[in-house]
Image (cartoon, rainbow, N blue to C red; front, side):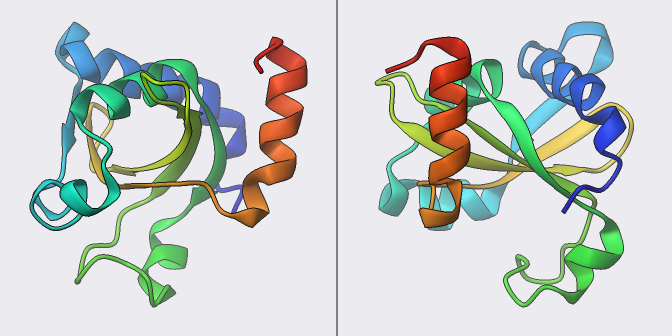
Length: 131
């Protein structure tokens, strides 16, 4: 869950650059999420962008770790990062981003935080003064 943790600040900056396409970076939202999950979960492109811009990486998985996970999307397996951030309305959300290359990233899914995220949320609210 801490795959290449020392690189997370740099990777998050790259994901953020990919939102606007800055310096050749590209962050897309997967068809899987748009076609199968967006309507159910209710987080749109603006919410996802806001979460990436306000959030921090809380977990990181290698290709091998993702390949073994039952919850992986179809046959996709890339290194991935879980970002905990806030939507436009201020709700917490977890965005999972797959790393395809050094400049190409894909939002695999987006979901409400689970019970295991509550402590991290409390810590971030204290650290940044968010209520």
